[in-house]
Structure formats: C-alpha cells, structure tokens
Image (cartoon, rainbow, N blue to C red; front, top):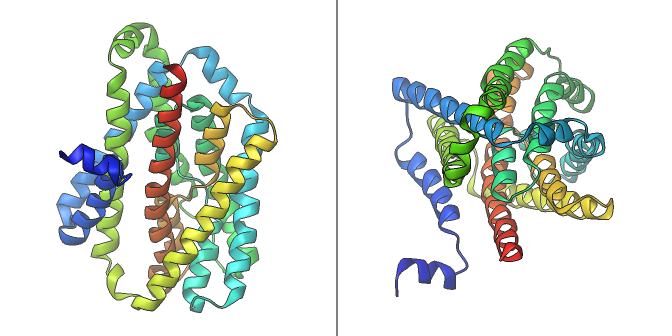
Length: 327
C-alpha cells in the first residue's frame, strides 16, 4: 500500500499535509534575520508572479465582468466589515477568553480579507478569479481606512492610520501592477499559458506554502509559544475554529440563497471568510502599545493558519466536483 492510497483512506489531502508541514518546519526551524528578509522577498516575488499569470490567463471580458459585479462585492464587504465585527463583539462579551485575547478576536474581526490566498483558493476551486481579484484588493484598500475606525468604535482604542498610504502602495505595486502587466502581455503569452495550465496550480499552491512558512516563522521568533497558557490556547483554537465555521457557512449558503452562480459562490466563500495577517500585524503595531500588540495579534495568527487549512480542503473539494462535472 503506497502513501497515496493511505492518504485516500484517511481522507487526507497531500496539500493539507504540506501546509501542516510548513507549520511544523517553522516551529522547528524558523527563519531569522537576513534569511527571513530574503524569504520575504521571495514570497513577494512569488505572489507578483501569481498575479501576472492570472492577468495573462484572464480574458478582458472576464476582468470587466469582475469589476462590474457590484452585488458580489457588496456582499463580500458586508461579511468582512459587518458580520465579522458583530461576531467579534459577541465573542468578546462571553468571557471565555482572557481580556487581551478577547480584544485580539475583536481586532481580527475588524480586519480586511486576505488577497493572495483568497484569489489562489478561488483559482484552485475554479471559481470567478476576476471577481476575487477585485473583491480581495478592494477589501484591503477599504480596510486601511475602515479597520482603524471600527477598532476605535468597538474597542475605544486611540490610534491613527499612519502608514496607510504605504499599505496602499504595497497593494498596488505587489498585486495590481503585476495583474495589469499580465493583461497587457496577454496577446504575447496567452498561448504559452494555455499549454502550461499546470503552472498556475503550482504557483497558487507554492505561494500559499511560502506565506504559511514565512508568517509562522515570524510568530515563532516572536515567542508565540510562550505568550499563552495551554488551556487558553485550546480555548482560542476552539473560538477561532467556531468563528471560521460560522462565517464559511454564512458565505456559502448566503451566496446560494441570493442566487449567485457556483463560480461566484466560490469567490464569495473564500474572499468573505478570510482575515489578513499581512495587514493586521502592522496595524496592531500602530493601534496598540508594543507589549499589548504581541498578544492582540495572537488570535489573528492562529485564525490565519486555521483559515488556510480549512479553505485548502474546501478548495480541493470544489475542484474535485468541477473535474467530475467536466468528466
């Protein structure tokens, strides 16, 4: 019996095991110093390549349709900046978690969606990638201004959005410009892309693995395993898992109930259920004092890992159903 057969019997996806492997590897051998800086550059280049390939793959008509799909974008923004904060308020009032961790849950609920993983999972699931690109990018752009306001209203925290324009610049340079470049290069490279469709999949999955390893390395170097008791860690895992499950169910069944297509449903599910570690960690440093910020971002770090694991399984399930439908 080979490894593939064993994994099939256990209902385990090799890609999910690879994600767990990145967490274990980062816990044992986290990158530090200049190596971490170099890995960060590699991650950014991988993500830029991902967006270039998506830009080159998508037809101009698909991009226009993605931009003008206002019902989908409004629904995703409602999940991100309305439903999530309401759920965060409920959790913070239950008293299940210690006050700082409860504040961390509320903070993560105020954050925008991820960009690269939302789009990568939508692509793996064969969903509406063009709409996902626009929705996830818009969520991050709006979040730069909406998140500090929500945090100030819900947590009574003093702080500004200094550095906000730097975040806007990073999104434009790292995501939108490569996508536009891919669109412009489409007449030259679309034929080659069509012959090497597997390349998109490798870049999707590879970029997410790099993000997981890089992000968790930073958490380990920052002393994540020394900042919380085992019991609080278990409770935090349960709360984060329950929060994600509620939102995943709401986005999936909400999209179906409102009559969205299966492709749109996938974009709504992946873009509406995520929270951005890349945006959240810098914002926490701005909005909270140094010692507090370290604990505040802990729920976000854990939620980030859980969402990647869960959504990888969901994306693979969607992809399998799509392949079976085509067959």
